Length: 84
Length: 92
Image 1 (cartoon, rainbow over the protein chains, first blue to last red):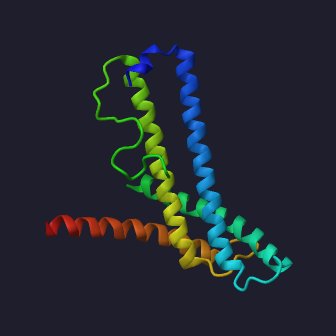
Image 2 (image 1 turned 90 degrees about the vertical axis):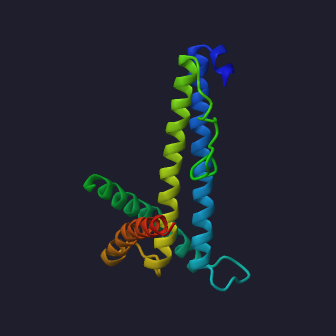
């Protein structure tokens, strides 16, 4: 931690940016992994020789609905917070 | 959720007593980032749980009953976690 003192303000700002970017990258990666898992589970029930067009349609909708669901959950949490 | 979140020490050990203003500011920054990550982790977990319970077949929009189920599910999970926590504390 004492190395922080050796940084100029702009170097520190850069470090903070890097941390933020890394957090974002990680969060995005986690999300992609989770959505893939959830939607594969729902849409590819009997894996065949190819990813069928029906499966692709399902996957596309599934990803959109999953993101939409995250929004609903966040909204519910925010509203709850505001009530308390 | 890999950085910090629910685990006791995130990155940047905040128990160190930071001495300089720069260290103090940086440790505040880390704490804020950890907190953001923790909130995101809860949202991610709740979405996952409630998705399994509420959305059977993804359509072209969430239906109103799916939306209602998701938001009830998220709220009831938080109620349940509070309820269980209170019970566990009482039992100790």
